[in-house]
Image (cartoon, rainbow, N blue to C red; front, side, top):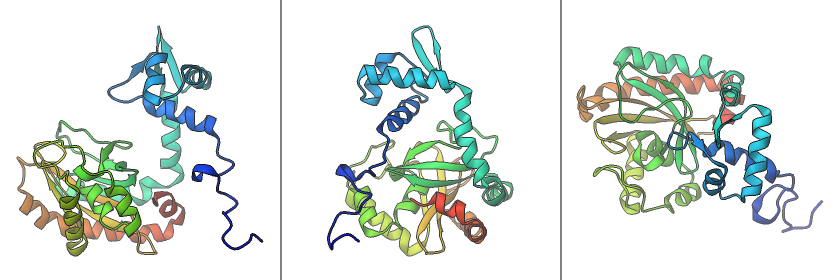
Length: 276
């Protein structure tokens, strides 16, 4: 038994577990460095983007090449299709298709909108499930897509229901990046918006991430009544007004959210994996 007030055995300097593998963290950091704007990078570019010493970045890249997750084309490195097995393992093991996709597909079929489920990942939302339409948006979304929480209805629906300390930590990033003239970037204004969400139970965004996009989102709660995810309907402003979207989609979203919450009670592993 430890003495009163002693540090927990699993804490070390910086709050990391003593079993934390910095080598693995660096390798994952290298994998995550590749994105839409950086599909191919030289060693020096990878080192700069990951803030790793070139020698460390080189060892990570060589290891990832050997494992088949990274390829090399002339002097540049790029991801290989094998990286998809990491994400597909989550989708398969957590029964996403059985639990989440049917309600989202129902929303899409009833409304003609895209429908998504996302979780918070730091100061961003991460799409875990997405059902699209044949309509094209300048800002594309899909499983694995990330957007800043403050510019999306999904993100604000999630942030509004966080415990006080977690919400404060998230809000400490204000002022936030502006994407359009309607993006809420001011901390006080955003806090007021989050408080409104907890009163009415949803958020709706119009032209906040990009022009021409309107959406409405509701939270998903776990068995302990803590927010774990959010779902939304999203479409073009040329199809429907914001007021009409909220009026017609909100009852459908709440029904879908209830269906997902009921299913999560039968799949506790999935609920645990979605938690912040």
